[in-house]
View 1 (spheres, rainbow, N blue to C red):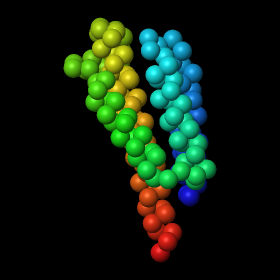
View 2 (view 1 turned 120 degrees about the vertical axis):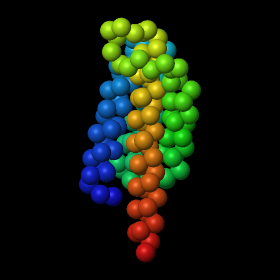
View 3 (view 1 turned 90 degrees about the vertical axis):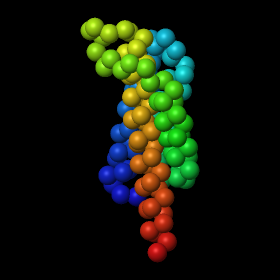
View 4 (view 1 turned 180 degrees about the vertical axis):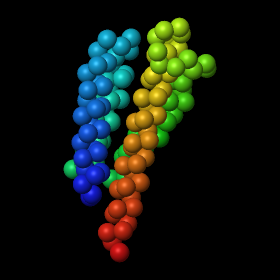
Length: 120
């Protein structure tokens, strides 16, 4: 595994752990703590090169579906100044899931093609 992807996995894992800790005051903290903890675990296992491509792919797929489900009808941005707090909260949650999904798809892509190329 390349050094960049190894460091990226560790960094994203740490960011997800931080996000999990910051969810303690969320209206539904356990859901988001669990989501960020799973993302952190997948990231750490990816950095250790011990995960199959299907794991981040499926988690990324679930995150995309979650983003679609949570995304507000009218996106009002992220700033609390001048918007409905629930709408803004849903927008933030949806974008968080989108970021997780994109990173998980990068992991899956990297694992799949790095293992494919190493067999050649």
